[in-house]
Length: 486
Ligand SMILES: Cc1ncc(COP(=O)(O)O)c(C=O)c1O
Image (cartoon, rainbow, N blue to C red; front, side, top):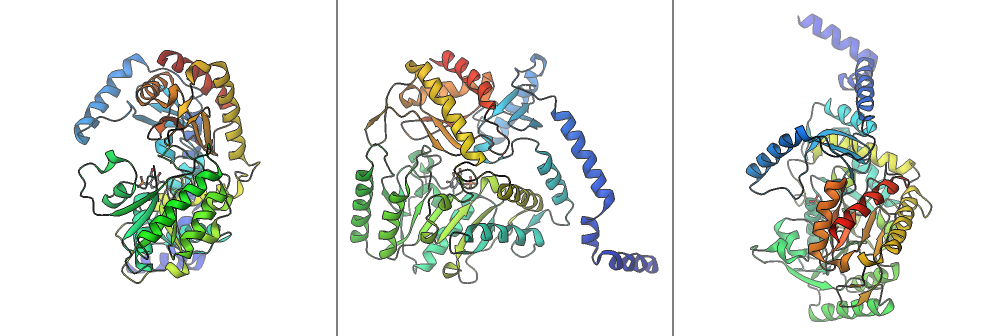
């Protein structure tokens, strides 16, 4: 017996050097994966557009939703349960309906549903001896994932290191720790009104949504700056600077960071120009306050892979966090912010499949023509905007002026940037937009809301597979749902 094993081992070693590399290069595995991929692609072809539920399957969906409510203790936001099949932007539910998924679990599935390359990457990841990578035990995938993110970030910033985490929130917890350690435990945080950073006890407190910190003991010291208001332009920059100066003056040396989303996600897809950030970052830096850029939602989906590149802000950033599209999440930081041993660790980093699919996504993003002012993402946004502008012009009664969070009236009802698209009907009324979302879901478009008043219709379409012409069908559905809601 032992002779057989050693003979086999020698043969493998001679051919490929390790059993692991032989597995990776196995023609038998390649053929099996090709067969699976072809079968998935064949089945998906049946999903070609939105379609209503099949009556006889309604009970199946209802049964599952009842179980989901029971086990979670709360019903889901939507009567959504996927069948496990999808085709690009289209997803099939267990009731047989097919819907345009324009929210993707809040921006996770950049290549939509059932993407063949990701199916393949996921299977390859699952062949690893490790289901989960961790801080004590990892294989080459975790190193390559970190290296790729750092290499991309370092083209236009001082990023040097990467710590992998299993959620955007944990990436943010890591970022905060780095900032605190770097500033000798400075207790205060500067954030922006309407920001969102995740749901740990700390991130819920920094995030500017009262409902998300209901009943939580408030033990984090946060100071808020107003975000950019396009209606006010330079005056908005001056106002934010004035607030920052006040904070620095009031609490000298007590801030461990200024944290920002470069396009606010949950807060309402609010954008700001470069000058807004440079003015604030310069002032913060003068006062020794580190800059932490939360790109958990923006990463991958604006006109550059990291949003700070598009805005030319890389030189200011000390720590940046990413997640969602990347499948595994991460906190990246400069050499200066490399912490002392013991500060960052954890049993789980990410599953091997998440890392392999994440790597596959990052490589496609690098080479797929997505970025730049004329890249696929910019063109998709332009197509969205053209459709949305025409829609607003055709139905002005659904789009009255909106009062923004600073109490100013605006007629701008189409907004966002890149793969973050928003529309503000019904004056941004929460209740009406909620009803609209339910009607849209029934009619075949899955969307969500953002903002804290005004509220907006939020789309995070799968930018990797969504084509400009898809908006024809999507807006036809929108028209039907809007009419039902109004
Ligand atoms: C800007 C931002 N930061 C952090 C998070 C938290 O990420 P996660 O839900 O993966 O913990 C989110 C999630 O929506 C986000 O949008």
